[in-house]
Image 1: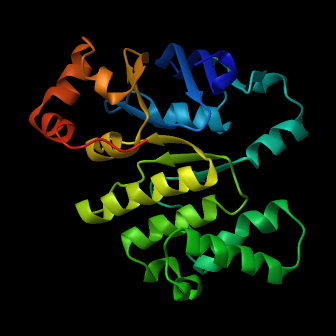
Image 2: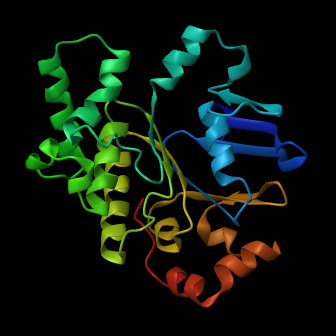
Length: 260
C-alpha cells in the first residue's frame, strides 16, 4: 500500500488522563476499503484511540490525518463535512430509548439535512431494510428489541447519512455465537456492497478471523503490529502470542478464512 491508499493516518499520538499515559508515540494507518480490526488488553486504550480519531477526544500530542489532511488544521466546515462521511456503532447501541427505531435512524438526517419528513422516513426504512431488520421493526422502541436487533438498529442509524467510513465498538459483544456470526456476515456484506471502510474494535476472535483484512494490536502504549491475521500470529510480541496462541485462538485459526 502507498500513502495514497491510507484513508486515515495517526502519527505520534499521545493520550493521557492526568498523569496516566495511555498512548505514547502511537502510529496507525487505515487503508481505504478495508475492514480494520483493533485489539488490545483491558486498559490499552482501544476506545480512546477510536474516540480520538472521531474527534470526541483531543490528542495530547501527535496528529490525525484524513486523506493526507491534518484534522487540527481543518476549518470547522471541513470537519463537519468529514464527520458526515462516517457512521458509528457504539458498544451499547446508544439508541434513544424514547424514539422508535425509525425515529432513531431519522435523527442524523434531522440534525444535518433539510428535507421533507416523508423523505426521511423513506430513507430510514431503506436503511432498516439494509440492516436486516424486518419491516415492522421500524415502529418498535429499543426496549422491545432483542440484543441482536438493537445492534442492527444501530447499524441502520450509522448508515443513515450514506457514510463511506464505519466505526464499530465491540459490535458482537453480548450476542450468542449464531447472532455474532450473522452480524459478522452483515458487516462483510455491507462493506462490499457499499464500498465501506470499516474500523472495528473487538475481542471476538471469530470476528477477527471471519471478516478483518488486517488487525492492529495495541500494547506498550502503541501499535506493535498491524497485519493480516495469517502473519500476525507469527509475531514475536508476548501479548500477541498469548492472545492468539491459546486454545481458543488456535481453534479459530483452523477455520476457513473469509473470501476476498
